[in-house]
Image (cartoon, rainbow, N blue to C red; front, side):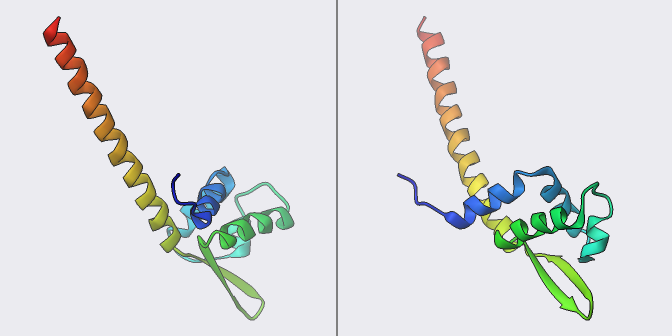
Length: 111
């Protein structure tokens, strides 16, 4: 059985939502105040803050409060872990598909 990685599960759970993915994309262009991040989304602030909590719990963002302004920044370390996992899976499946291709070519040549 594969090694259980709860942190990786949290990252994929967080990224499963289109609003949270959009927040990550916007933060890729630089830190933003919560109010700036929330502007393009048609939802109440408490709902938006729930999305930020999920992202922060997954380790994808960090927040810092200066005075009355809470600024959110991207924390790319967890994204790198997810990228590594996806890369490993891609390599595994490319190898399996190459083996299947070889097998099919061999059977075709023998026919």
